[in-house]
Image 1: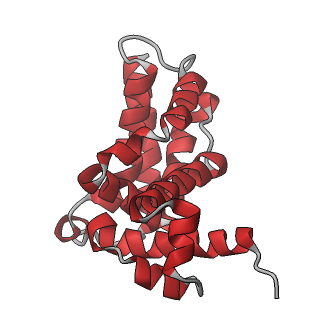
Image 2: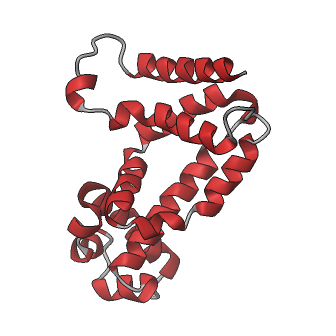
Amino acid sequence: MARDAEATKERILAAATVEFAAHGFAGGRVERIAAQAQSNVRMIYAYYGGKSGLFDATLAEALRRMADNVPPRPDDLAGWAGDVFDHHERFPEVLRLSMWAQLERPEATAEPREIYRNKTLAVATAAASPLSAIDVLVFIYAIAQAWQLSPGGLTGLEEGPGVEARRHAVVTAVERMLRARA
C-alpha cells in the first residue's frame, strides 16, 4: 500500500497541535506525536527536520488557519473582535500554542509576520490618530483574548450567561475604545 505523504503530514500536524498546546515545546514529545498520528518519529524528522521544525510548522499552520477563518473586517472591528473571541473559544489550542511559542521559542513567532503585516494593512484605514494600526490590532487581540488569558480565580467569580455575555463585553469594549479615539 502506497503512503499518502500529505495525509501523513496532516495527521502529524494535528497530533502536534494537541501535544504542543498541552505540553509546550519543551514538554512535547515527538514519540507521543508519532504514535497519535499513526506514524513514526522518522517521518517527523523527514518532513519537519525535527521537533523544532515541527513546532514552528504547527504554530504557523494554526496562525494561518486563524487568519483564513477570521480575517480582519476594517468596517466592523468590534464585530471582528467578537469573531476572534469566538475562534479562541472553539480552538483554544491556537492561543495556547502562541503563548508557548512566546515563552519557549520566540524565534518561531517571527515566522507569521506576513500574516500580521497583512492584518495591519487591512485595518490601516480604520486606525486614526493617535492610535496606529498596530496599536489597534494589539488592543483588539488583548481584549478578544482577555477571558481566555485571565486567571481562573477571577473569571470564575462571574455568574450568569457565560460565553455570550463575555463575547458581548469584548465587542462593547472594542466599540468604546474605537469611539473614544475618534
